Image (cartoon, rainbow, N blue to C red):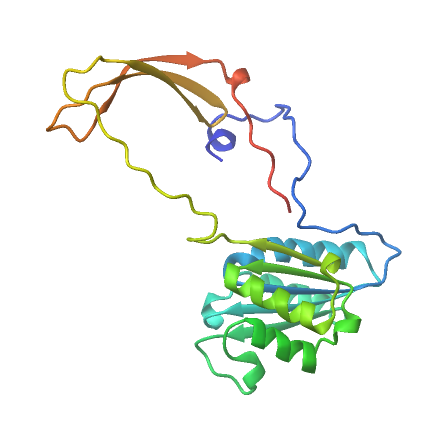
Amino acid sequence: STLAVENLRAGEELEVMPPAGHFHTALHPAQTKHYVAFAAGSGITPIFSIVKTVLLTEPGSRVTLVYGNRGRNSIIFKEALEALKNKFLHRLSVYHILSREQGDADLLFGRIDEEKARQFLTKVLPARQIDECFICGPEDMVRGVRAALAEAGVASEKVHFELFGSATAGATQATKTKLPPAGADDKKSVVTLKLDGGARQLAMSYSATPSSTRPWKAASTRRIPAKTACAAPASPV
């Protein structure tokens, strides 16, 4: 972050919040499980951390990763995944699904969707052998994989997923606001901007004229001490 790069100095103490969210499961060195992960594109980011943590924390567990990309050159963490595979040769299996590069096996060509997940569950990943499953990627991909897992009999409590988000799901309907006529009472509002651990208050004056496309103007600003700013919770690993 900009705050860390420009302001922090050696020896400073920071308060750190614990990871938040539900995209995780309890790990224990004594556990022996088979973890399965489906990821597409940058959805590998949290999945990679989970895979690495499982392999380091649970010596008796194994992981199968199904990872979708357009081509070999677009595979994120390619070298890191290869290094991890070489280190845990008998405990990590990685299947790269490419949508724009045809390989020798049809199973490894295309996109990760409900049908592709169904093929893997039939040929490679018997549902009865899946103890935990993690899915991260676009909404359509996540929904498809979840549907295939449910159809195969994998209990919903074993399936953990994280969405990139959707352009339509949960979108709010835009509303039209009628501007007051020119000459209306000039009312002021105070807007608080929070950025990089600090906050600034701006007194905004409303001024609408027929020719203006910028109805808001800042009348004055007031600096707020950083200690009053709200810090966002840490993102889950």
